[in-house]
Structure formats: structure tokens, C-alpha cells
Length: 264
Ligand SMILES: [Zn+2]
Figure 1 (cartoon, rainbow, N blue to C red):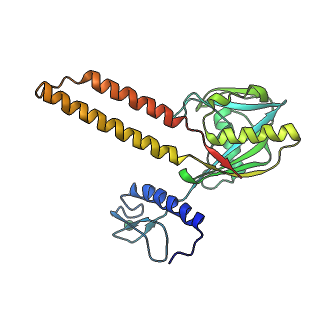
Figure 2: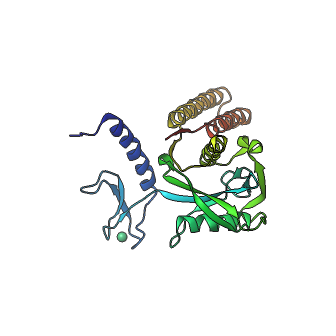
């Protein structure tokens, strides 16, 4: 019997699918190297990878991304990424929190690594959860200790942007877009305050795109069969393959550009 409210049950279904996807990738035990099996352990609700040798359960939990929103003379410091993902796009200095450090320490370190900038943390500004990819962002307001910064290893460029000049068309992550929008809204009405929110990537359109991919695949298969019928078993399908590749690319670009929803 399931007594959860409908909305929660619906949400739980997606969560289950998600953890299933993640645990499917864990094929070997991290402590003994034994092969794992995938099951819902007794008393739990989610699919886990369980070691068939030592019985250890590999728990997969969300990751914490920490970063700084640096204010300097009414401008904001952004870094242009020199690494994948989102190569060439702008972001606030941010990255995965390491073991043994606080969120504020991590944000300071990431700022040093990506922008060679020493900062003082002023206050937490936003916590943004992205359940669908298992990430939580914590962004701090910070100020430069001295007005020095330059691109670090992972950046090709670091620049101060006036609020009107922020390159919203070429931001790296939905979390940065939401953070900067919230910040600008706050500044328009007064002082920045703390925000908590959830970013939902649009998985409905994701499924639509999967379906389109499948259609294109079917189409290409039909074309191939037709051609093979016509010219015996000769392999001369370059134009068709190119067409299919182009279509795939189009769909991929379309899928990457899907905006994220945001709620508080
Ligand atoms: Zn094991």
C-alpha cells in the first residue's frame, strides 16, 4: 500500500528512475572490487548497487557545487570556461566541494583556481537544488580582497560585467542563469537576500527528443533497406547517412537549448 500523496508518488517515480540510471553504472564494489547486483535493499525505497561478495551498498548521493558571486564596483566577476562541459561559456567561479572543506572554503578555493582572485565571503546568497541531475548549488556573495584577478587553469578569460552587460545568451549553466537573475531582481529593489529554489530540467521535452531520435533512426533504417533492395548489397549510403547525421545534430542542439524551469 502506498499512502503517499499523488504529487509525491509522481515525484518518487522520477527519483526512482534516476537512481536506477545512476546505480546501473556501478558494476563493481568500491571496497572489495566484487561484482554488484542491482536491487532495492530491505527497508529501503531506492534501487542500489549491492556487492555480491561483501554485501556493501554503494550509495549515490547528490553532489554539492559551491561558488562565489563577486561584487566589485557594481559589477560581477564572470569566468569563461576553457574546459568541458560548456566550453567557451560564462560562469560564476564555482566547482565541486572537496572532502574536508566547508562550503565557504570551497567557494573561495574555486574562485582562486578559476580567477586567481582572493575573496572574502560576505553571506550565502542562494541554494539551488537540481534533483534531476543530483546537484545542489550554494553560491556566496563575496568581495575581492584586492582588485586583482586573471584567468586560472580552467578559464580563458575573467571579466567584470555591469549588470546590464551580463551575457545571458552564453551562460554555462542554468544554475548561473537563475543566480544572476535573482541577484539582478534583488538589486533592483534593494539589497540581495538569501534564496532557496529548485531547478527542474524539462524532462518532458527530453522524452520528446528521445522519441524524435527514435523516429529518425527508423527512417534511416527504412531508407537503408530500400536502397539495399535497389542496388543489391552495395554500401553506397553516404548521402543518406549525412542527412541522418545532420538531423541528429539539429535535434541535439534543440535538446541542449531547452530552458530550465525554476520554482521556490
Ligand atoms: Zn564488496
